[in-house]
Length: 301
Length: 276
Image (cartoon, rainbow over all chains, first blue to last red; front, side, top):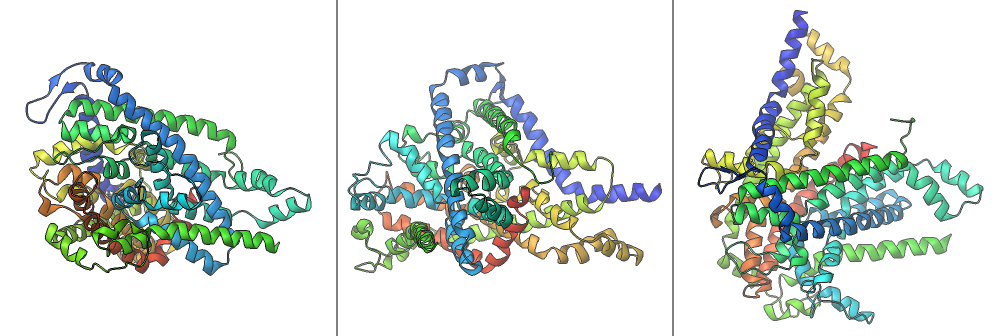
């Protein structure tokens, strides 16, 4: 008995950094954020209680609606694109030998290590309508490329292309998953005369559904919180001239502006909780739907 | 069969060009004179190494570089040490509330940072540290859910007998952790260290929130300032912004190449990929 209590205290001692951090940087801030969301607060005067006013304003604020729609549209475009491109690249790599797979894995992972702010700057130039590289390449095949960074409807496709450049970690994850699919399944299917598409649809997808599901969730949550590239390319720091393009106003950008440029800390807190609810709902729906598609080795879990 | 191989290798070659070209373009454009930045010729017709002297004159890049090194090293060391401590606590001990607490650790991964962003800012503000570099790394002294999860997996993989034998010989819990578990889990610690180094080096949002004085900027924050001043809406001196991009990117690439064996192997075997 005594030994067990001593063990428990030792365990809590090891856990203490996280437990202290949880209280200071999670629990208290969460409560504070909820309380603040019902106040008018600018960090200078003390907060004024305003009831549900911030939440009512959320529903009426056209910029909230705009940024939320932008973010959702971007998510719906970028997540499937990322998954498809990563899966295609990973499939190409499965048949490559060990050494060459290592080389390509590194090549695809390189952009992932590039700080997003540098990616934003780089593509701002590559996407330049007149002289940018992307349109120069499109020109070679006779396509008159759009004004990626200024023409509203083309801004989000541009941001998706930018994001597709950093699919490296997803490729690595899929590659590991594909390596785990038993060869015999494909051989048996081939003997039965299954086409390449059928083998992909009936064997590959179910066998790596765990990895697909994982990246779906993680990519969606990340896309809903996109900030760096769009902010770098389209928004100036408070002091500089603004060169905003409404099509790139992501939810987190607007939240950041409300909080740290206009110092509407109460309103921004309400925005943060709306984001939390949106992320939670989307994730729950995805988990629900996935139960039908995700196959785990070893039966139900 | 061979036709299929040709298609596959062509596709791989095309993908390689697409992934590498922007890098090569960036490196080459950063040493072109202003008028030729948009030329799309890979070998500059005139080499303008001056760009790297100009950026030095235009902004305190050396200070930004040192700030980035200091902040991201502190962040990576802190998170690796404390997360491994907590992970060992979860992996080795049996104690009341273990699974509930670990569930809480995992749950915190789901919470968007935006929810705690404002109160955490107010906490640092109350502590008088809001406009210093401390908030950029000090939170890591308390561990981080992702690394706790990652490292716990590694610690769970160690054979229990090793620890029991050491206990019999009178080793303290601390000795078990520091002398046995940590050395055996070096690869996982390297993965956690490099991951956080990359995350912290690249972070833009927190430096935007916390850093007001340009002398304290990290490289990404500095690059954003350069891009505001010389890019899009500014003086259109893209060669300076590009040189800044290179300075922000290349150090991380070097770290990656040095650590890459542990790094990629780490994500492949123990990282998010093994969630299935």
